[in-house]
Amino acid sequence: MNDEAAGADRPAPWWVRGIVYQIYPRSFQDTNGDGVGDLAGIIRRLPYLQWLGIDAIWISPFYPSPMADFGYDVADYCDVDPIFGTLADFDRLVAAAHEAGIRIILDFVPNHTSNQHPWFLESRSSRDNPKRDWYVWKDPRPDDGVPNNWISNFGGSAWTFDAATGQYYYHAFLKEQPDLNWRNPAVRAAMHDALRFWLDRGVDGFRVDVIWHLIKDGEFRDNPVNPGYEMGRAEIERLLQVYSCDQPEIHQVIAELRAVLDAYDGDRVLIGEIYLPLERLVAYYGENLEGAHLPFNFQLLQAAWDARHIRALIAEYEAALPDGGWPNWVLGNHDRPRIAGRLGPAQAKIAAMLLLTLRGTPTLYYGDEIGMEPVPVTGADIRDPWELNEPDLGLGRDPSRTPMQWDRSPGAGFTEAKPWLPLARDWQDRNVEVAMNDPDSLLSLYRRLIALRREEEALSVGAYLELAAEGDILAYQRTYGDHVLVVVLNLGHHAMPFDLPPGLAGEVIAATHGARDGARLTGRVEVAPDEGFVLRTAPH
Ligand code: NOJ
Image 1 (cartoon, rainbow, N blue to C red):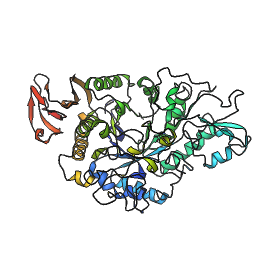
Image 2 (image 1 turned 180 degrees about the vertical axis):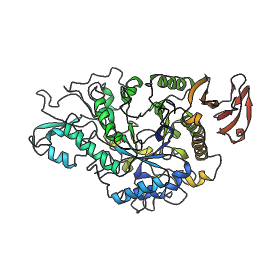
Image 3 (image 1 turned 60 degrees about the horizontal axis):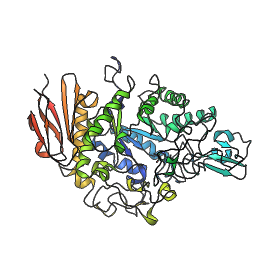
Image 4 (image 1 turned 90 degrees about the horizontal axis):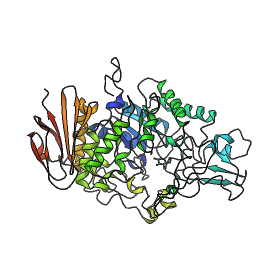
Protein backbone atom coordinates (compact mmCIF):
# COMPACT_ATOMS: atom_id res chain seq x y z
CA MET A 1 0.00 0.00 0.00
CA ASN A 2 1.29 3.46 -0.75
CA ASP A 3 -0.51 6.78 -0.46
CA GLU A 4 -2.36 6.14 -3.67
CA ALA A 5 -3.47 2.70 -2.50
CA ALA A 6 -4.69 4.18 0.76
CA GLY A 7 -7.12 6.30 -1.24
CA ALA A 8 -6.27 9.43 -3.17
CA ASP A 9 -8.15 11.71 -0.81
CA ARG A 10 -6.79 10.21 2.39
CA PRO A 11 -3.15 10.18 3.46
CA ALA A 12 -1.74 6.91 4.79
CA PRO A 13 -2.40 6.41 8.52
CA TRP A 14 0.46 7.40 10.84
CA TRP A 15 1.36 3.79 11.59
CA VAL A 16 2.24 3.14 7.94
CA ARG A 17 5.14 5.61 8.10
CA GLY A 18 5.67 5.28 11.85
CA ILE A 19 8.37 3.45 13.80
CA VAL A 20 7.32 1.62 16.97
CA TYR A 21 9.58 1.29 20.04
CA GLN A 22 8.69 -1.32 22.65
CA ILE A 23 9.20 -0.42 26.31
CA TYR A 24 9.24 -3.11 28.98
CA PRO A 25 8.26 -0.71 31.76
CA ARG A 26 9.80 -2.67 34.65
CA SER A 27 13.22 -2.13 33.06
CA PHE A 28 13.12 1.28 31.41
CA GLN A 29 13.47 3.89 34.16
CA ASP A 30 12.88 3.79 37.89
CA THR A 31 12.00 7.12 39.52
CA ASN A 32 10.85 6.08 42.99
CA GLY A 33 13.85 4.05 44.06
CA ASP A 34 12.30 0.57 44.24
CA GLY A 35 14.46 -1.00 41.54
CA VAL A 36 11.52 -1.35 39.15
CA GLY A 37 10.75 1.04 36.29
CA ASP A 38 7.58 3.13 36.31
CA LEU A 39 5.39 5.41 34.20
CA ALA A 40 7.06 8.55 35.56
CA GLY A 41 10.30 7.02 34.29
CA ILE A 42 8.92 6.80 30.79
CA ILE A 43 7.93 10.48 31.00
CA ARG A 44 11.46 11.32 32.14
CA ARG A 45 12.92 9.57 29.11
CA LEU A 46 10.62 11.06 26.48
CA PRO A 47 13.32 13.55 25.39
CA TYR A 48 15.57 10.59 24.58
CA LEU A 49 12.84 8.91 22.54
CA GLN A 50 12.20 12.17 20.74
CA TRP A 51 15.91 12.53 20.02
CA LEU A 52 15.98 8.96 18.69
CA GLY A 53 13.11 9.88 16.38
CA ILE A 54 10.62 7.07 16.92
CA ASP A 55 6.89 7.68 16.39
CA ALA A 56 5.17 5.47 18.95
CA ILE A 57 5.89 3.53 22.10
CA TRP A 58 4.26 0.22 22.85
CA ILE A 59 4.33 -0.29 26.63
CA SER A 60 4.17 -3.84 28.00
CA PRO A 61 1.43 -4.24 30.68
CA PHE A 62 1.34 -1.90 33.67
CA TYR A 63 -2.13 -2.89 34.97
CA PRO A 64 -2.72 -4.08 38.54
CA SER A 65 -1.29 -7.57 38.68
CA PRO A 66 0.09 -10.12 41.13
CA MET A 67 3.01 -10.27 38.62
CA ALA A 68 3.02 -14.05 38.29
CA ASP A 69 3.91 -13.35 34.63
CA PHE A 70 5.11 -9.77 35.21
CA GLY A 71 1.92 -8.02 34.25
CA TYR A 72 0.62 -10.47 31.64
CA ASP A 73 -1.65 -11.65 34.44
CA VAL A 74 -4.08 -8.73 34.71
CA ALA A 75 -6.22 -8.27 37.82
CA ASP A 76 -7.92 -5.07 36.62
CA TYR A 77 -8.00 -3.92 33.00
CA CYS A 78 -8.78 -0.31 33.87
CA ASP A 79 -6.12 0.82 36.31
CA VAL A 80 -2.39 1.12 36.91
CA ASP A 81 -0.47 -1.13 39.30
CA PRO A 82 0.97 0.96 42.16
CA ILE A 83 4.44 -0.33 41.33
CA PHE A 84 4.18 1.61 38.05
CA GLY A 85 2.27 4.63 39.35
CA THR A 86 -1.29 5.86 39.07
CA LEU A 87 -3.89 6.67 36.46
CA ALA A 88 -2.94 10.31 36.92
CA ASP A 89 0.65 9.39 35.98
CA PHE A 90 -0.72 7.63 32.94
CA ASP A 91 -2.70 10.69 31.89
CA ARG A 92 0.44 12.78 32.32
CA LEU A 93 2.34 10.32 30.16
CA VAL A 94 -0.22 10.51 27.36
CA ALA A 95 -0.21 14.30 27.44
CA ALA A 96 3.59 14.58 27.54
CA ALA A 97 4.11 11.94 24.85
CA HIS A 98 1.59 13.56 22.53
CA GLU A 99 3.21 16.91 23.16
CA ALA A 100 6.49 15.32 22.08
CA GLY A 101 4.87 13.87 18.95
CA ILE A 102 4.98 10.30 20.30
CA ARG A 103 1.95 8.01 20.21
CA ILE A 104 1.06 5.50 22.89
CA ILE A 105 0.24 1.87 22.20
CA LEU A 106 -0.93 -0.25 25.12
CA ASP A 107 -0.51 -3.96 25.61
CA PHE A 108 -3.97 -5.51 25.77
CA VAL A 109 -4.08 -8.99 27.32
CA PRO A 110 -7.49 -10.43 26.47
CA ASN A 111 -6.83 -14.17 26.35
CA HIS A 112 -6.51 -14.62 30.10
CA THR A 113 -6.80 -12.70 33.33
CA SER A 114 -5.01 -13.14 36.61
CA ASN A 115 -6.53 -15.79 38.88
CA GLN A 116 -6.93 -12.83 41.27
CA HIS A 117 -9.15 -10.89 38.87
CA PRO A 118 -12.59 -10.39 40.51
CA TRP A 119 -14.18 -12.06 37.46
CA PHE A 120 -12.25 -15.27 38.10
CA LEU A 121 -12.84 -15.15 41.84
CA GLU A 122 -16.56 -15.02 41.09
CA SER A 123 -16.32 -17.63 38.36
CA ARG A 124 -14.60 -20.17 40.58
CA SER A 125 -16.89 -19.46 43.56
CA SER A 126 -19.62 -21.87 42.39
CA ARG A 127 -20.84 -23.72 39.33
CA ASP A 128 -23.91 -21.54 39.05
CA ASN A 129 -22.22 -18.20 39.48
CA PRO A 130 -23.22 -15.86 36.61
CA LYS A 131 -19.53 -15.53 35.68
CA ARG A 132 -18.89 -19.30 35.65
CA ASP A 133 -19.05 -19.33 31.86
CA TRP A 134 -16.69 -16.35 31.54
CA TYR A 135 -13.84 -18.86 31.82
CA VAL A 136 -13.24 -22.30 30.36
CA TRP A 137 -14.46 -24.95 32.83
CA LYS A 138 -14.71 -28.67 32.00
CA ASP A 139 -15.65 -31.83 33.84
CA PRO A 140 -12.93 -34.38 34.54
CA ARG A 141 -12.64 -37.13 31.94
CA PRO A 142 -13.38 -40.56 33.41
CA ASP A 143 -9.92 -42.01 32.65
CA ASP A 144 -7.13 -39.71 33.70
CA GLY A 145 -9.08 -36.68 34.81
CA VAL A 146 -7.78 -33.87 32.63
CA PRO A 147 -10.35 -32.82 29.99
CA ASN A 148 -7.85 -33.21 27.11
CA ASN A 149 -4.14 -33.43 26.35
CA TRP A 150 -3.46 -29.73 25.89
CA ILE A 151 -0.17 -28.46 27.30
CA SER A 152 0.52 -25.07 28.86
CA ASN A 153 2.89 -22.81 26.94
CA PHE A 154 4.96 -22.68 30.11
CA GLY A 155 5.02 -26.49 30.54
CA GLY A 156 2.76 -29.01 32.29
CA SER A 157 -0.94 -29.62 31.70
CA ALA A 158 -3.01 -26.63 30.60
CA TRP A 159 -5.74 -27.75 33.03
CA THR A 160 -5.92 -27.13 36.76
CA PHE A 161 -8.45 -28.88 38.97
CA ASP A 162 -10.60 -26.79 41.27
CA ALA A 163 -11.51 -29.08 44.14
CA ALA A 164 -14.22 -26.78 45.52
CA THR A 165 -16.37 -27.02 42.37
CA GLY A 166 -15.08 -30.31 40.96
CA GLN A 167 -14.09 -29.02 37.52
CA TYR A 168 -10.92 -28.13 35.66
CA TYR A 169 -10.17 -24.69 34.25
CA TYR A 170 -8.04 -24.10 31.18
CA HIS A 171 -4.94 -21.93 31.08
CA ALA A 172 -2.79 -21.65 27.98
CA PHE A 173 -0.05 -20.15 30.18
CA LEU A 174 0.38 -20.27 33.99
CA LYS A 175 -2.30 -21.68 36.27
CA GLU A 176 -2.41 -18.13 37.62
CA GLN A 177 -3.58 -17.02 34.12
CA PRO A 178 -6.98 -18.65 33.50
CA ASP A 179 -8.25 -18.28 29.92
CA LEU A 180 -11.37 -16.24 29.33
CA ASN A 181 -14.19 -17.77 27.30
CA TRP A 182 -14.38 -15.52 24.24
CA ARG A 183 -17.38 -17.45 22.91
CA ASN A 184 -19.38 -15.74 25.65
CA PRO A 185 -20.81 -12.40 24.40
CA ALA A 186 -20.67 -10.91 27.92
CA VAL A 187 -16.89 -11.42 27.97
CA ARG A 188 -16.56 -9.69 24.62
CA ALA A 189 -18.67 -6.75 25.79
CA ALA A 190 -16.66 -6.35 29.01
CA MET A 191 -13.39 -6.42 27.10
CA HIS A 192 -14.65 -3.90 24.54
CA ASP A 193 -15.44 -1.62 27.45
CA ALA A 194 -11.87 -2.01 28.70
CA LEU A 195 -10.59 -0.93 25.28
CA ARG A 196 -12.87 2.10 25.33
CA PHE A 197 -11.64 3.04 28.80
CA TRP A 198 -8.15 3.57 27.37
CA LEU A 199 -9.25 4.91 23.99
CA ASP A 200 -11.18 7.60 25.85
CA ARG A 201 -7.95 8.47 27.69
CA GLY A 202 -6.26 9.08 24.37
CA VAL A 203 -4.26 5.95 23.58
CA ASP A 204 -3.36 5.49 19.93
CA GLY A 205 -3.71 1.74 19.69
CA PHE A 206 -3.13 -1.69 21.17
CA ARG A 207 -0.75 -4.57 20.77
CA VAL A 208 -2.97 -7.56 21.50
CA ASP A 209 -1.33 -10.36 23.44
CA VAL A 210 -1.56 -13.89 21.91
CA ILE A 211 -4.50 -12.81 19.76
CA TRP A 212 -4.56 -16.14 17.88
CA HIS A 213 -5.35 -17.94 21.12
CA LEU A 214 -8.65 -16.29 21.97
CA ILE A 215 -10.88 -18.96 20.43
CA LYS A 216 -10.36 -22.65 21.09
CA ASP A 217 -11.89 -25.68 19.35
CA GLY A 218 -15.58 -25.92 20.22
CA GLU A 219 -15.21 -29.63 21.03
CA PHE A 220 -11.86 -29.37 22.82
CA ARG A 221 -10.38 -32.22 20.82
CA ASP A 222 -6.95 -33.57 21.73
CA ASN A 223 -4.05 -31.92 19.89
CA PRO A 224 -2.11 -34.34 17.67
CA VAL A 225 1.38 -35.43 18.66
CA ASN A 226 4.19 -33.49 16.94
CA PRO A 227 6.26 -36.10 15.10
CA GLY A 228 9.12 -33.57 14.78
CA TYR A 229 9.47 -32.97 18.52
CA GLU A 230 13.05 -33.06 19.75
CA MET A 231 14.16 -33.64 23.31
CA GLY A 232 15.36 -30.49 25.01
CA ARG A 233 12.69 -28.33 23.41
CA ALA A 234 9.83 -26.68 25.30
CA GLU A 235 7.18 -29.17 26.41
CA ILE A 236 4.43 -27.33 24.49
CA GLU A 237 6.15 -28.46 21.28
CA ARG A 238 5.30 -32.12 21.99
CA LEU A 239 1.91 -31.44 20.43
CA LEU A 240 0.82 -29.63 17.29
CA GLN A 241 -1.41 -26.76 18.34
CA VAL A 242 -4.22 -27.69 15.95
CA TYR A 243 -7.21 -27.29 18.25
CA SER A 244 -6.03 -24.98 21.03
CA CYS A 245 -5.62 -21.84 18.89
CA ASP A 246 -6.00 -20.29 15.40
CA GLN A 247 -9.63 -21.38 14.99
CA PRO A 248 -11.76 -19.93 12.16
CA GLU A 249 -14.08 -18.03 14.53
CA ILE A 250 -11.17 -15.90 15.75
CA HIS A 251 -11.48 -13.57 12.77
CA GLN A 252 -14.94 -12.42 13.78
CA VAL A 253 -13.67 -11.70 17.30
CA ILE A 254 -10.84 -9.59 15.90
CA ALA A 255 -13.16 -7.74 13.53
CA GLU A 256 -15.24 -6.78 16.58
CA LEU A 257 -12.15 -5.49 18.42
CA ARG A 258 -11.21 -3.55 15.33
CA ALA A 259 -14.70 -2.03 15.11
CA VAL A 260 -14.27 -0.70 18.65
CA LEU A 261 -11.11 1.13 17.56
CA ASP A 262 -12.59 2.28 14.26
CA ALA A 263 -15.38 4.10 16.07
CA TYR A 264 -12.70 6.55 17.27
CA ASP A 265 -10.92 9.14 15.15
CA GLY A 266 -7.15 9.38 14.76
CA ASP A 267 -6.31 6.05 13.13
CA ARG A 268 -6.02 3.97 16.32
CA VAL A 269 -3.93 0.95 15.45
CA LEU A 270 -4.57 -2.73 16.18
CA ILE A 271 -1.44 -4.86 16.28
CA GLY A 272 -1.73 -8.61 16.81
CA GLU A 273 0.85 -10.83 18.49
CA ILE A 274 0.79 -13.97 16.35
CA TYR A 275 3.34 -16.75 16.10
CA LEU A 276 2.11 -18.73 13.10
CA PRO A 277 3.49 -19.80 9.71
CA LEU A 278 3.25 -17.09 7.07
CA GLU A 279 0.21 -18.42 5.24
CA ARG A 280 -1.76 -18.56 8.51
CA LEU A 281 -0.39 -15.24 9.75
CA VAL A 282 -1.64 -13.17 6.82
CA ALA A 283 -5.22 -14.36 7.44
CA TYR A 284 -5.14 -12.06 10.47
CA TYR A 285 -5.42 -8.98 8.24
CA GLY A 286 -9.00 -10.18 7.75
CA GLU A 287 -10.62 -11.23 4.49
CA ASN A 288 -11.47 -7.60 3.69
CA LEU A 289 -8.79 -6.02 5.88
CA GLU A 290 -11.20 -5.83 8.80
CA GLY A 291 -8.74 -7.66 11.07
CA ALA A 292 -5.50 -6.47 12.68
CA HIS A 293 -3.82 -3.56 10.91
CA LEU A 294 -0.47 -5.13 11.68
CA PRO A 295 -0.29 -8.84 12.47
CA PHE A 296 3.23 -8.90 13.89
CA ASN A 297 5.73 -10.41 11.47
CA PHE A 298 8.29 -12.22 13.62
CA GLN A 299 10.31 -13.87 10.85
CA LEU A 300 13.49 -11.94 11.61
CA LEU A 301 13.45 -13.02 15.26
CA GLN A 302 14.75 -16.44 14.38
CA ALA A 303 15.83 -16.23 10.75
CA ALA A 304 19.10 -17.91 9.85
CA TRP A 305 21.42 -14.98 9.11
CA ASP A 306 21.99 -15.88 5.50
CA ALA A 307 21.49 -13.56 2.52
CA ARG A 308 19.59 -16.07 0.36
CA HIS A 309 17.39 -17.15 3.20
CA ILE A 310 16.48 -13.58 4.14
CA ARG A 311 15.89 -12.64 0.52
CA ALA A 312 13.48 -15.57 0.27
CA LEU A 313 11.61 -14.77 3.44
CA ILE A 314 11.12 -11.15 2.37
CA ALA A 315 9.86 -12.36 -1.02
CA GLU A 316 7.51 -14.92 0.54
CA TYR A 317 6.12 -12.37 2.96
CA GLU A 318 5.61 -9.73 0.26
CA ALA A 319 3.87 -12.32 -1.93
CA ALA A 320 1.63 -13.56 0.88
CA LEU A 321 0.34 -10.11 1.92
CA PRO A 322 -3.26 -9.47 0.98
CA ASP A 323 -4.01 -6.56 -1.35
CA GLY A 324 -3.79 -3.37 0.68
CA GLY A 325 -2.32 -5.16 3.71
CA TRP A 326 0.59 -3.17 5.13
CA PRO A 327 3.73 -5.15 6.09
CA ASN A 328 5.72 -4.88 9.32
CA TRP A 329 9.00 -6.21 10.72
CA VAL A 330 10.14 -6.93 14.27
CA LEU A 331 13.75 -7.41 15.39
CA GLY A 332 13.32 -8.11 19.09
CA ASN A 333 10.90 -8.31 21.99
CA HIS A 334 10.71 -9.23 25.65
CA ASP A 335 10.15 -12.93 24.88
CA ARG A 336 13.04 -13.61 22.51
CA PRO A 337 16.85 -13.56 22.68
CA ARG A 338 18.35 -10.15 21.94
CA ILE A 339 19.55 -9.62 18.40
CA ALA A 340 23.02 -8.34 19.36
CA GLY A 341 23.65 -11.56 21.27
CA ARG A 342 22.51 -13.65 18.35
CA LEU A 343 24.50 -11.86 15.66
CA GLY A 344 27.31 -10.04 17.46
CA PRO A 345 27.92 -6.28 17.52
CA ALA A 346 29.03 -5.84 13.90
CA GLN A 347 26.02 -7.62 12.43
CA ALA A 348 23.70 -5.83 14.86
CA LYS A 349 24.36 -2.76 12.68
CA ILE A 350 23.42 -4.68 9.55
CA ALA A 351 20.24 -5.88 11.28
CA ALA A 352 19.37 -2.26 12.16
CA MET A 353 19.86 -1.21 8.57
CA LEU A 354 17.75 -4.10 7.34
CA LEU A 355 14.89 -3.39 9.79
CA LEU A 356 14.81 0.32 8.97
CA THR A 357 15.03 0.01 5.20
CA LEU A 358 12.54 -2.79 4.56
CA ARG A 359 9.03 -2.08 3.37
CA GLY A 360 6.78 -2.15 6.43
CA THR A 361 6.38 -0.65 9.88
CA PRO A 362 9.46 -1.45 12.00
CA THR A 363 9.22 -2.33 15.69
CA LEU A 364 12.34 -2.09 17.80
CA TYR A 365 12.87 -3.29 21.33
CA TYR A 366 14.31 -1.03 24.03
CA GLY A 367 18.05 -1.48 24.46
CA ASP A 368 18.59 -3.09 21.08
CA GLU A 369 19.53 0.36 19.77
CA ILE A 370 22.61 0.35 22.03
CA GLY A 371 23.37 -3.29 21.31
CA MET A 372 22.37 -4.69 24.70
CA GLU A 373 23.27 -8.36 24.81
CA PRO A 374 21.52 -11.15 26.70
CA VAL A 375 22.47 -10.87 30.37
CA PRO A 376 23.06 -14.19 32.14
CA VAL A 377 20.52 -14.46 34.97
CA THR A 378 21.04 -17.44 37.26
CA GLY A 379 20.11 -18.95 40.61
CA ALA A 380 18.21 -16.73 42.99
CA ASP A 381 18.13 -13.89 40.43
CA ILE A 382 15.83 -15.81 38.06
CA ARG A 383 12.41 -14.18 37.80
CA ASP A 384 10.84 -15.61 34.65
CA PRO A 385 8.17 -18.21 35.54
CA TRP A 386 8.84 -20.11 32.31
CA GLU A 387 12.51 -20.60 33.27
CA LEU A 388 11.42 -21.67 36.75
CA ASN A 389 8.93 -24.19 35.29
CA GLU A 390 11.18 -25.59 32.58
CA PRO A 391 14.73 -24.89 33.78
CA ASP A 392 18.00 -25.10 31.87
CA LEU A 393 16.55 -25.45 28.38
CA GLY A 394 17.51 -21.91 27.42
CA LEU A 395 13.87 -20.78 27.42
CA GLY A 396 14.26 -18.10 30.10
CA ARG A 397 13.33 -14.57 29.10
CA ASP A 398 15.06 -12.66 31.90
CA PRO A 399 18.25 -12.14 29.82
CA SER A 400 16.25 -9.97 27.39
CA ARG A 401 14.52 -7.96 30.11
CA THR A 402 17.36 -6.41 32.09
CA PRO A 403 17.49 -2.70 32.96
CA MET A 404 18.12 -0.13 30.26
CA GLN A 405 21.68 1.14 30.38
CA TRP A 406 21.56 4.92 30.38
CA ASP A 407 24.91 6.00 31.79
CA ARG A 408 27.97 5.02 33.85
CA SER A 409 26.44 5.65 37.27
CA PRO A 410 26.13 2.70 39.70
CA GLY A 411 22.56 1.78 38.71
CA ALA A 412 23.27 2.59 35.04
CA GLY A 413 20.97 5.61 35.38
CA PHE A 414 18.08 3.16 35.64
CA THR A 415 17.77 3.08 39.42
CA GLU A 416 19.44 4.12 42.62
CA ALA A 417 18.31 0.91 44.29
CA LYS A 418 19.05 -2.74 43.54
CA PRO A 419 17.48 -3.39 40.13
CA TRP A 420 14.84 -6.13 39.93
CA LEU A 421 17.03 -7.98 37.41
CA PRO A 422 20.83 -7.71 37.30
CA LEU A 423 22.52 -5.12 35.10
CA ALA A 424 24.64 -6.23 32.18
CA ARG A 425 28.31 -6.47 33.13
CA ASP A 426 29.28 -4.03 30.37
CA TRP A 427 26.94 -1.20 31.37
CA GLN A 428 29.73 1.28 31.98
CA ASP A 429 30.89 0.97 28.38
CA ARG A 430 27.61 0.19 26.68
CA ASN A 431 25.10 2.85 27.57
CA VAL A 432 23.10 5.64 25.97
CA GLU A 433 25.37 8.42 27.20
CA VAL A 434 28.52 6.88 25.75
CA ALA A 435 26.82 5.84 22.51
CA MET A 436 25.24 9.25 21.92
CA ASN A 437 28.67 10.82 21.87
CA ASP A 438 30.16 8.30 19.46
CA PRO A 439 29.30 8.94 15.80
CA ASP A 440 30.26 5.33 14.97
CA SER A 441 28.00 3.73 17.59
CA LEU A 442 25.06 1.51 16.82
CA LEU A 443 22.85 4.13 18.47
CA SER A 444 24.10 6.86 16.11
CA LEU A 445 23.37 4.56 13.19
CA TYR A 446 19.85 3.85 14.47
CA ARG A 447 19.22 7.57 14.81
CA ARG A 448 20.55 8.28 11.32
CA LEU A 449 18.45 5.52 9.76
CA ILE A 450 15.31 6.59 11.61
CA ALA A 451 15.79 10.16 10.37
CA LEU A 452 16.42 8.88 6.86
CA ARG A 453 13.27 6.79 6.89
CA ARG A 454 11.39 9.92 7.82
CA GLU A 455 13.01 12.00 5.05
CA GLU A 456 12.76 9.45 2.27
CA GLU A 457 9.35 8.35 1.10
CA ALA A 458 11.12 5.64 -0.87
CA LEU A 459 12.00 4.05 2.50
CA SER A 460 8.74 4.64 4.34
CA VAL A 461 6.15 3.97 1.66
CA GLY A 462 8.11 3.10 -1.48
CA ALA A 463 8.10 -0.14 -3.41
CA TYR A 464 10.54 -2.95 -2.66
CA LEU A 465 12.53 -4.59 -5.41
CA GLU A 466 15.12 -7.26 -4.74
CA LEU A 467 18.45 -6.85 -6.49
CA ALA A 468 20.71 -9.64 -5.29
CA ALA A 469 21.42 -12.31 -2.75
CA GLU A 470 24.89 -13.53 -3.67
CA GLY A 471 27.27 -14.96 -1.14
CA ASP A 472 26.76 -12.83 1.94
CA ILE A 473 25.46 -9.80 0.04
CA LEU A 474 21.80 -8.89 0.24
CA ALA A 475 20.82 -5.91 -1.92
CA TYR A 476 17.51 -4.31 -2.75
CA GLN A 477 16.01 -1.17 -4.10
CA ARG A 478 13.34 1.04 -2.58
CA THR A 479 11.58 3.38 -4.99
CA TYR A 480 8.99 6.09 -4.79
CA GLY A 481 8.20 8.00 -7.97
CA ASP A 482 11.59 8.82 -9.45
CA HIS A 483 13.40 8.43 -6.13
CA VAL A 484 15.49 5.30 -6.05
CA LEU A 485 17.48 4.10 -3.04
CA VAL A 486 19.71 1.06 -3.07
CA VAL A 487 20.50 -0.87 0.12
CA VAL A 488 23.57 -3.10 0.15
CA LEU A 489 24.22 -5.32 3.18
CA ASN A 490 27.10 -7.69 3.82
CA LEU A 491 25.71 -10.33 6.17
CA GLY A 492 29.09 -11.93 6.60
CA HIS A 493 32.53 -11.22 8.00
CA HIS A 494 34.43 -11.26 4.67
CA ALA A 495 34.82 -8.58 2.02
CA MET A 496 32.63 -9.26 -1.01
CA PRO A 497 32.35 -7.52 -4.36
CA PHE A 498 28.96 -6.24 -5.46
CA ASP A 499 28.01 -4.95 -8.90
CA LEU A 500 25.57 -2.08 -8.85
CA PRO A 501 23.00 -2.35 -11.63
CA PRO A 502 24.44 -1.08 -14.95
CA GLY A 503 24.13 2.65 -15.39
CA LEU A 504 23.29 3.20 -11.74
CA ALA A 505 25.38 5.70 -9.80
CA GLY A 506 24.68 7.22 -6.46
CA GLU A 507 25.80 8.75 -3.22
CA VAL A 508 26.03 6.94 0.12
CA ILE A 509 23.57 8.57 2.53
CA ALA A 510 23.82 6.13 5.46
CA ALA A 511 26.60 3.69 6.26
CA THR A 512 27.77 1.30 8.94
CA HIS A 513 31.37 2.33 8.15
CA GLY A 514 31.88 6.08 8.55
CA ALA A 515 34.50 6.24 5.79
CA ARG A 516 31.87 5.30 3.22
CA ASP A 517 29.60 8.26 4.06
CA GLY A 518 29.09 10.62 1.14
CA ALA A 519 31.00 8.37 -1.30
CA ARG A 520 29.88 8.34 -4.94
CA LEU A 521 29.58 4.78 -6.15
CA THR A 522 29.04 3.10 -9.46
CA GLY A 523 29.91 -0.25 -11.09
CA ARG A 524 31.73 -2.79 -8.92
CA VAL A 525 31.97 -1.99 -5.22
CA GLU A 526 34.13 -3.85 -2.74
CA VAL A 527 31.88 -4.25 0.29
CA ALA A 528 33.88 -4.51 3.53
CA PRO A 529 33.24 -7.28 6.12
CA ASP A 530 30.03 -6.50 8.06
CA GLU A 531 29.42 -3.41 5.96
CA GLY A 532 26.11 -1.97 4.91
CA PHE A 533 25.15 1.25 3.18
CA VAL A 534 22.24 3.06 1.60
CA LEU A 535 22.81 4.77 -1.72
CA ARG A 536 20.69 7.53 -3.21
CA THR A 537 20.68 7.50 -6.97
CA ALA A 538 20.11 10.77 -8.77
CA PRO A 539 16.46 11.22 -9.76
CA HIS A 540 16.15 10.66 -13.47
C1 NOJ B 1 2.88 -13.19 25.23
C2 NOJ B 1 3.70 -12.22 26.00
O1 NOJ B 1 4.51 -11.49 25.11
C3 NOJ B 1 4.47 -13.00 27.03
O2 NOJ B 1 5.45 -12.22 27.67
C4 NOJ B 1 3.50 -13.59 28.00
O3 NOJ B 1 4.17 -14.42 28.92
C5 NOJ B 1 2.44 -14.43 27.27
N1 NOJ B 1 1.93 -13.78 26.12
C6 NOJ B 1 1.28 -14.71 28.18
O4 NOJ B 1 0.52 -13.54 28.34
